[in-house]
Amino acid sequence: MISRAGQPPGNTIRVSSDFAWLLLRMYVPDADPSLGGHNLMGGVPLPTVSVTRNGASQQLQPCLRVNRLADVSALLQGLFPVDLTVIEGTPTSDRLWFAAPTAPPPSLLPNPENKYLGMFPGDTYQPGRIIVIHGKAPGFPDTFHGSSIATPARGFRTVDLRYWSICEADLALPVPTVGCVTDLTADVVGGYYTIVISDDLLRPAWLRPNIRWLPWGDEQYPKMLFFRNMLPSPDFHHSVQDAVAADPPCTFALVLTGTLDRSSVDEAGKCAQEVMGDYYPVATWCDKTTFIAGGVRACLKE
Image 1 (cartoon, rainbow, N blue to C red):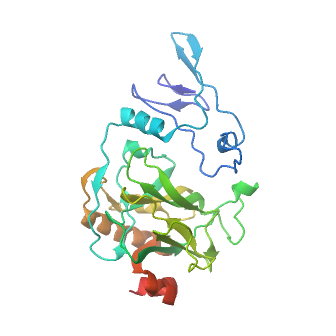
Image 2 (cartoon, rainbow, N blue to C red):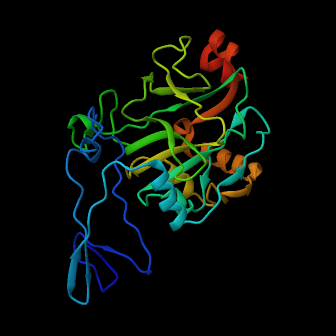
């Protein structure tokens, strides 16, 4: 139930404004070979929605499970009339900083159980180069394969976060995802993951199997990367939530129209790295030849 009246009973979400929205978000759905949308909803139908006014209830017609991108974009543009014209410019150095926005804009549809670090790689792709991201993997429960939320996935001793991911998105409504590396799909070696982003159309042959690859995607759109942390354990003190709650908070003001203030992003990123330690995703532009010759260590050393 969603209600504005009184103290809500169990399974009720209370809202305090005339306008609110409810998201049913599926982070890692089962495979759906038919593309019919059923498995994309976790193998169950969409929930029924009824609106009650003055004691009378009316059940609404459900939407299709799969919608055209143009329709979703038009809906979001109607809800959040904002022009995503972030001018990222050119990074001041090869180092790229992930930093937490003070308040993620509603058009990005933030989840209150999540906190995010965002990274802006620049307006254009740098030819002959790649982006390398490296960090320590937080422990998570392998619920995808049926484990309890209290049981660490294989290779981890503790459940640090309920879920984490690094996703690349186009900065255009509805902010479509280019690709993601999730806790489930990250290849962890010695406790650490490595992600490479390149402008190749297919996974390049020069990448080793234990390195995750994300394509840069359509070059007409600037990119933004998100590091998502969901529901950290009370015993885990290296999450994005800890960086946001620091005193002073490791955050910056994210404005989706205009020129990005890179100095504030860089400073907030450095602050977040101090809080998160090895769990902070270190990112850099790197020459492809340097990576092929020396791997992630050579890129981070530069």
